[in-house]
Length: 433
Image 1 (tube, rainbow, N blue to C red):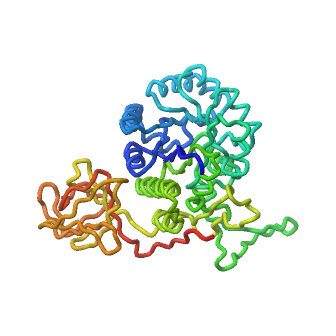
Image 2: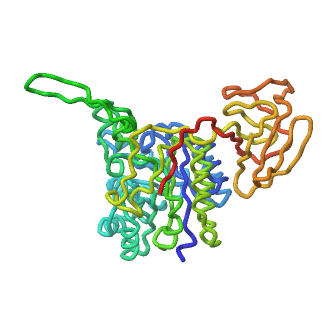
């Protein structure tokens, strides 16, 4: 059997998502502050104060936060970077995620007490490169997405003290582990410095030119083939968690998605936690995990490179659409007083709404003038509102996203519980073997 201490690592795009990921099953989260993180948009969601609040929150639960400083700095940024490393270290994260060798050296000098994790951007694929970084003081490598499980085992065999982290879910890059210049060329936004414009997700029109005649004509696409010619499907290795854990070579499995929704953070943490727990209980059920993951927005799913070589399984590209809706819409989020919720979609009286609650929480059934919380024949919990009342007792015919009024619950529900309804037009391709 594999390493029972395998960690589930989730994205934390902001403080709310950090709390959600931890409450729905993650052992640790990763996130960052400022442009030295490779997700500049999510980096702006955190201030130093809220990131420290997130670290303290995680530590109060016995969980961890890893701080991303994985951009590639210009010469003009190095002095600012030094100050940033010192400031981030003062927040007491559990590790610093770094990509560039020079930044690894800086972190060792300026924050020697904090472990260093090597970003996937460093593209480690073999034990020789892993050894170099280990000698520099790195104690965990986040392997390139293109690595195979066989090569992960080989690295572990040569470096048993080096922790190995692999991606198991989320967006895939058209280029080799993020080494892309398309966005820089077309939009002036440099991917390896945190500002990728996701040009590979665009729909493209193809043209043919004849230099002799100076002619240019549009190529007609074959019906059903589509023009999303660079668009990679999303990684989904939930069905292979058993193989990953059995290998004994993986210390942490990682979910991509700091810029994705709170619902994505919840579902992915919840599902992969189930998969890990089920493996050790000998009741692994990949179909159940896939049904849950299909409720999130996705580009279609692929198991990518860890188990199969790309040429062995030609299913990594999605030429038909950039992003599907997912099979469910999130309609509400329970507030911290546990007596109200905020609408995230649209809610009507007498509507059957599924309750999606944090891991290991207890739901009390009830029924009163406001509505009821009940359990259906499918074993799932639901809520139905007879009245839509704001916290000031104003009754509404319905409530929609954008309405910031807290809506009363018929009974208490755990903080960060989500409500969801089936999408009438999901357009989900999902996972295919």
